[in-house]
Image (tube, rainbow, N blue to C red):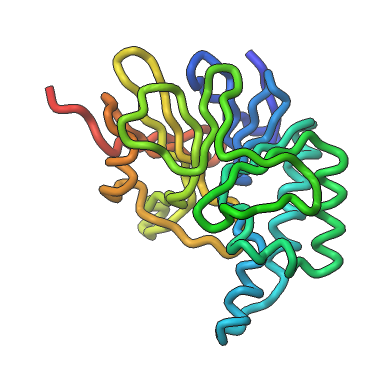
Length: 239
């Protein structure tokens, strides 16, 4: 078994007979591919809001890219797959201020970087490096932005920004999570948590999420809690 340490904590999981590591930083690390997968960076969401009269601090892209750079260093990843909505809109690439643009350029130059297009950035041009695809198949696993209802092949996606409400010391806390579906044949599909600094969330048991992962036998929310991966049942096939 491959172990990747995050502050002395281990968060390995099996996904389609592959070792994966769901990190506390909302990335999925794939050791065999030496790859980090992230979803929904929504870079330049702050500047998009500002252009429409909602003034928010304009440093979301810097924060998101800094956290991603930290994850790359921590895992030793050589590849990054960004699973769509990497920019909040199609003009986001051109709005990156010089500092954030420099951060992104450094990352795409040093890594094998692949942008998967999403509904927010379907006209992504990759002007700061990396290659672009609508979807990919790596090691028998589909990488796409949005889960496709009726898909029976292994799949990793984003789009829904899933979050899980948990009780901690009599308080309700909402935390980003992954949502994992497994069928009787052992196939799995996973929706990753949103990574961007300004991304909200949808309840993990929302009908839109559960419907996108059908057909399946079970669906669980999965998230790092303390020193382990916690699993919360969301849906089970009727007996």
